[in-house]
Structure formats: structure tokens, C-alpha cells
Image (cartoon, rainbow, N blue to C red):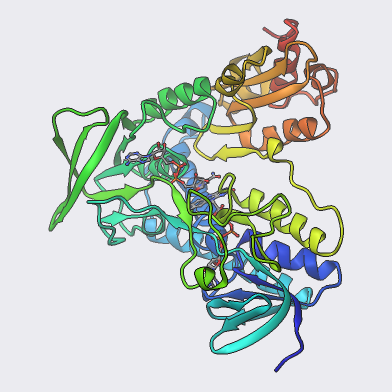
Length: 463
Ligand code: FAD
Ligand code: NAI
């Protein structure tokens, strides 16, 4: 039997591998168990990275066929080589997953290849060998939620995994779910020529985002050609030789109708992936939504067993999983690891992008918090005009009495990068005036953030 480890992390996604690296940096003897052939989890293999590669490539294609001419650049005869686009995506994924392998080696972390099963606290079985450890960290991630009546075959009826792998642009793509995945992959295939219809159960898209931003996003995506069927539920999907016939009904009840599709993308959310971990035998408790129940220090009810990332409560985002991985490693090393859940950004990588941190207007109204709003449109930003990307706005929400920033919501070019300043501001407990009095370089998109902060006090300069 080998020497015991200090920490065995089960799962090498952004939660698990980052936790392993931080624990190794703090002097612990660490192993990371991963059953997939490559490291990096959902995020690097079938999530964040391949989707962003295809979003970028499809955006280049759409730009070359459309807005490039506005710049006086005439690219005639632009054609799509989907096989090359998919091969580039695979190269991007491959470089990233190899990067994680390098990082594990560099930090002397053992990769235990195979599925990890908890035999007892302090004991993990991997491929028939039982390894001993002081601490176990479960970071086994998530999987897509199935929908009764919609049988996924990853060919005609796909989850995001199959939706990233299509080798032909579908004539008609129906997306079930108007959330992160539906809008990102719907945008990819729309830009490449598919007719895309998004069927959403609720009467709005991206339900966790600010309502005004969501309405604006829907309007802009509709102009790009995406069709929306809100307040609609799918009751059946029958795959045939030449496509899929969907049966839909109004969510509130009513007559059924049919929608024909070549490919259906099921994207109604994700749920913790807990198969084969031996949780029931180990006595690890779940919460009412099937997630591993943890305390604020990521401890489960079983001493020595911890959990982070998509398997526990909170937004299912890679950077949230990473923050938890770092905090937990520091807690295990006797330090004061901590995650500020009030300052975790969320970004939808459509074009324009949507980025959000903190509370929405709906949250503040529900909590009865008095607030001021500062808004600034990209139409009034010089850099956005120069880019030819003037859709959207920055919207800041600040406490009416103290001026403290409570939320920031951006729809516009590079919103995902712009939000970082506001996350930092909120981490430092900044007021809107702090942001407004900070010098922002000209001409940059970030001046729209400064102007929105000025607008909170009714003194925007450029509108
Ligand atoms: P995961 O990344 O799911 O990793 C868990 C790993 O554990 C997997 O590799 C799995 O094989 C392994 N595993 C499971 N059980 C065992 C076992 N018993 N033994 C050994 N190994 C095991 N988030 C963002 O922040 N930004 C984005 O742009 C973004 N885009 C996304 C796009 C798509 C299409 C999808 C599906 C998700 C996206 N996400 C994005 C979400 C993000 O991928 C997840 O939040 C993140 O990967 C969660 O990290 P994790 O470490 O908890 O789990
Ligand atoms: P989601 O939770 O973002 O969106 C699911 C949507 O489906 C919601 O709008 C919901 O109302 C709707 N829905 C639920 N049941 C339905 C039904 N029966 N019929 C029709 N609509 C229904 O989930 P999604 O898009 O599957 O993504 C999963 C998670 O992965 C995201 O929540 C996010 O955490 C993560 N992700 C993050 C990305 C990013 O950060 N850019 C990109 C992709 C995924």
C-alpha cells in the first residue's frame, strides 16, 4: 500500500484540479482522480472552452459575411468550412487539457486514472486499488437534466455535448431552454445558417439575469434571426428518418401543436453528477435538490469528506467552482478560505455579451431595498461607435442611502471583460461614486461603465 495522501480530489474539472493545485502549493500530498481520458472536466472538454471556440469562429464567419463590409472591407465569396472549424475547436480543447496535465505534473499531483469510489472516510477506490487519505474532496461536476418524452441520442436529439459536435449545419434547430447553453449554441448554429427556434417554458429568457437586460437580449437575438416561443413546454420529441417532430403546448395549458426540426438541442439545466461515488454507503447527505449538502466550509455531514463546484449549491459556473477549490484547500491547510457569493459574475457569451454581478432590479424590489439606477447606452460611447458595436447598455444599481454598489448588469460588446471592474469594486465595497471618480482610459468601452456610475447620481457627461 502506498503512503497516504493528505488530499484526494475526485474529479479534475475547474473545481477539482484548482483545489488540487492550491493544496499542493500549500505543501500537501495530493492526488486527483479523473475517469475521463483527459483532464479539465466538463469545462475544458465539452463546456466553456469548446463552446467559446465555436462562438468565436461563428462570430468571425458572421462578421465576414455582414458587418465587415460596413468597415469598407469587402470579402466576397465567404464560405464555411465546418470541418476545419470543428478541427480548430478540438485543437483549442486539446491545448487546454494538456495544459492542465502539465500543471498537475509541475505541482507533483498524482493523477489516479479511473472512477473514484468512496469506500469509507479516508479511503478511495480507483480501478481496484484503495488509496488512503486524510481528506476527500468530491468535485464530480454535473450532467444535463433529461426531459421525459425527449430521448437524447446525441445525433438528432442532442445535449450540449452533441450540439458542439454537429458535422453539418442543421436546416432547422429547435432549442429547448432559453438559458446559457440554448442561447450560446443557438447563436453558433444561427450564425452558421440554421433556422433556430428557442422553446422556453417561462415567459422570459435567461431567468437569473436582470429582466430589462434579458428583454433587450431577446430583442437583439430576434433581429439576428433567432425565433422565440416563450411560455411553451415540450411534451414529446419523436425522432424520424428525416428529423424530429416536437409536440409543444402552452406552459399554462392549451392546445398541442407540432414543430418540425432537423436537430433538437435539449438545454433545460444541469444537475449534480453523483453516479458511482458510493455516497449512500458512506452516508453523505444530499439537500432537497439532490446536491451534496455542505456547510460554509464545504464539509459534508461525514467528517473528512468535502464537496465543491457543480455538485453543491450555487451557480454552476467554472469560476465559482475554482474559487471554492482554492478556499477549501486553504481551509484544509488551516487558513481562512472564503468565497464571496455576492460577487460572482455570470456571463452569456452571445454577441452582444451579457454580464452580470450582484443583485438584479427584481431581487432588490423583492427584498424591498431602496436603490438608484444609473444607465448608459453604448450608442453614446465613442469606442463602441468605432467598433461598430453600439447595441446594449451598462446598468448599475446602488443603495439609495449609502450609494454602495449592489448590482451591475451589462449587455454590449465585451461585457464579460467589462464586468471584472465592477466585481472588483463590489469586492472592495465600493460606491457608485468611487467608480465614477476613477479615471478610465479614452476611448474605451469601459468609459460606458464610468458614465453609468455617474448616471447613478444623475450626472452622466456624454448623454
Ligand atoms: P466538472 O467540470 O463537471 O468536472 C467534473 C469531473 O469529474 C469530470 O471530468 C468527470 O469526468 C469527473 N468525475 C465525475 N465522477 C467521477 C468519479 N467517480 N471518478 C473520477 N472522476 C469523476 N461555466 C462558465 O463559468 N463559463 C462558461 O463559459 C461555461 N460554458 C459552459 C458551456 C457548456 C456547454 C456547459 C455544459 C457548461 C458550461 N459552463 C460554463 C459550466 C462549467 O462547465 C461548470 O460549471 C464547471 O465545469 C463545473 O466544474 P466542476 O469542477 O464542478 O465539475
Ligand atoms: P439554464 O439553467 O441556464 O437554462 C435552462 C432554461 O431552460 C431556463 O430558461 C429554464 O426556464 C428553461 N427550462 C427548464 N425546463 C424547461 C422545459 N421543460 N421546457 C422548456 N424550457 C425549460 O441551463 P442550461 O442552459 O442548460 O445550462 C446549464 C448551466 O450550465 C447554466 O445554468 C450555467 O450554470 C452553465 N453554463 C454556463 C455558461 C456560461 O457561463 N457562459 C454557458 C453554458 C452553460
